[in-house]
Amino acid sequence: MGRSIYCVVTAAGSGTRLGNPGPKALVELAGECLLHHALRTLEPLEGLAGVVITAPRDYLETFTQVAQDASLSYPWKVVAGGSTRQNSVYLGLQGLLSFDRGARQVCANDPEAIVLIHDAARALTPLEQFQRVCRAVASGCPAVVPATELVDTVREVAGESFTRQEVAITPAGATPDRSRLRCVQTPQGFAGNVIFAAHQQGREETNTTGGALDDAMLVAHLGYPQYFVAGSRRAMKITYPLDLHLATWMAQNSNRE
Ligand code: CTP
Ligand code: MG
Image (cartoon, rainbow, N blue to C red; front, side, top):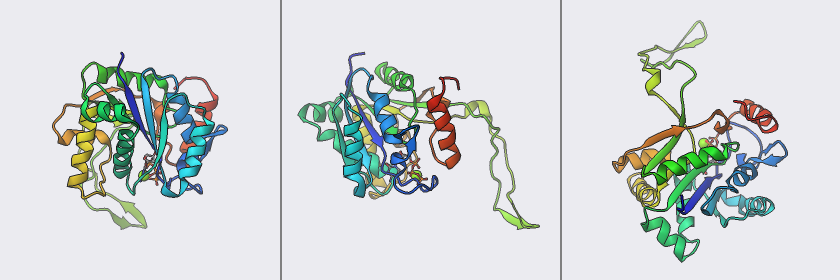
């Protein structure tokens, strides 16, 4: 493929829903923390030229130690994340610019650079998923999102919830065509100039405390087409305690999904 790849690994969240003490990225999964798993997966990615990890402000040293202990052969750095994921990604992108002169030029101005944004919370994302996303960007797609088909039928909510007989009840509405819907994952991949412009604009529009749910949403505002590639169930986001149990099983077992 021959193109330089840069990656922001977002890990500055607190993991409220998981409920463990300390940041979610430091939670142990099969003997290593989530951040370690995410960083080690990137190791064989061909063309990887730099990784920025966003950390909670009070944990910069601990996160640096995790990256050091992972014996990574690619250049990396840890930066403080922000109060929202969007903020953290913005700060992570700024971190890419300060790698060195070459990286600055490549990322900010060069559409040839590929920038991946990946959640440490998706700690078991397979290498093949990173490679698929990179290949799709390299083929000319400016914004690429790995995605899976929905397992459940989804329905719209048609009105306010109310309580009857001590049960919370919500009026149900239309059933969207499931075959036209996807669940989105990371890493999301972008042409370098596109993701920098999208986050710059997102920051200006949301007055620095942005709440975009994912990075492709910001790119959509700029009018670029976006494309899906296959995601995988192993790339699930570890969110609740049950997810951690499932991930532990996956880490210790074969590639079966
Ligand atoms: N993230 C981040 N900065 C934030 C919030 C989230 O870098 N201010 C990162 C998380 O570390 C995670 C990814 O974004 O890798 C996806 O977020 P999520 O799974 O929601 O993690 P948390 O925000 O930590 O969890 P919760 O919402 O349960 O508190
Ligand atoms: Mg969150």
